[in-house]
Image (cartoon, rainbow, N blue to C red; front, side, top):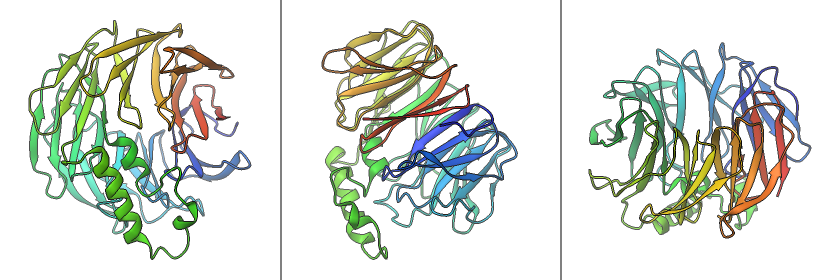
Length: 375
């Protein structure tokens, strides 16, 4: 799907799998209609590249953040900006994360972080910064808002920090990596992403007057507690030191150090069923690990250049990878091999996403084109 005038840097399906958003070097956010596969809205206002996008857990808002350090909130139904830009970061923003639905069904609070070493929490209704979370001594590379009221941040200062979201108090600093920490994944990422939208749930529940927020909140909470019964989240970090570390939020010491990659590890994601972890590396491989103990399962080889990003199918059977070599590949977890190559990009693939309901795959990259595949 052509449309952007510059590289597609970030993309994300909405939690209800109805919309797709893409952020680009052309300073716009585009919202795509998945039924017609055409751009629905082009959202303008950013003065710099759009580095990251994040859907609110109710799918009714989307946040985009740019290199100029501004965040804008948009309505997917109108394409219009909601409120004023959220301004406060002094350098570019690299990551965004909303408070989970089961903690706030109004989806009012958003966390952001980036190259000014700080994380911030915003009230998107008032358009104000409610908390500056300072403590890292280098750029923050990832922020995750967990389901138990904790914020996790990873940084180029080689640490991961865990904060109490309500007051910004630092709870723990996790150390072990010997170089930049590039990314984080929580074992609860998928249930937090899809909160009130279960792929097999009656979709009609979701629309209407919003009076059923309590029921949806309860469902989101139950889904979260199923993955995380005691409120203790596990998470995995990946680094420029070629390793990954597996952690539990209630222990300062890592559970295990995951070695084997021969180069920088750029991306990591838990499977939706929380049985596996997939990591993407500049060593041209994807590695699969057992989520419970971090044990190595296999390496998936086939890319001829660095692998930038990975994604999972909703049923946790397939892994998607996007690479500098301009290809997307789909791998079978069970068979531990390549099952499909999705060609079509003319240059490096920067971002991939698999719709939370498993129905589609999207990719974007340097060639300015957004690709969609039905699954």
